[in-house]
Length: 397
Ligand code: SF4
Image (tube, rainbow, N blue to C red; front, side, top):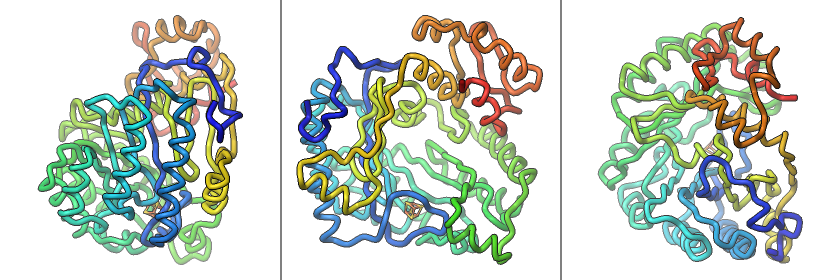
């Protein structure tokens, strides 16, 4: 049993494996140059001494978890945040070494780092490649400089283009770009331009998220004061379907509601979230899953540091899952994937015949055209992509 996580103890036998018995590791780096006006992540300003203390605590958390997770085979490592590239390559290397020391990281592991355009130069990117980081995800969000300024991003569109060029020159063959759709005042013309820029850069992977504002977000306050106008749902839906069609036209497979990839370039790490695989998670606010439980660490950085330094657990919440919770989660998580749910495999794994258990809900969704059932596979339909929450609700008891 790991000394700092007594409530997380579980034998290897008691774990439940999803579709893939290889695990992922998520590492949260909670520092950013500035705070974007919509952000609700656990992140704050970068200070070198705080970062030094944080890296030491993160390594200690990994050390303390090693006994509990002994034997875990890992095929993906993901540095998220925050802006992980606020750390030095040496600090990132120290964290990676800890993971490789304690876990069996497979030789072709996917190792991803999130980065902001403008936060990395060519030398830094080469050093990431030297560490074995083979995938980089840039938070581009928009190519319109007025939109970027409005949402408080620390970079402009020029830095986004340069970041991709620099990453290619450093040897990154797997680049992902993030965009946000549905920004206040956004026009369909700027959206079309954003997509044009994205496809011209030819990343291997694309994630597009609809803007969701929490109550106290500065951007939300500006909308409430009438300084900015939120766009209507009809326009957001038009943007989404334009993206779906343009991505297909440029050779990208849509494999999840918000994610597109060139063939063979789906995010192996993110797929773990939707397919019931284990993922370990370390750092502030990091959330993990071992087949029996979901857990998450504290979101308060000084609590995190104090707890780790006192040899105590940073876990703030543990949600145990029973068999029915797991089968229910498996359904609505896999429905996020365009491949959908293999109903025969689902019954074999969870002992539940979906067509019988959810007969009425499935009938409603089929009538509304929000799902399709073909042979033994149930998938979200094109119409269902923008009404996914209505689909998932039918499978949540
Ligand atoms: S860069 Fe990302 S994590 Fe940092 S403040 Fe902006 S949205 Fe939040």
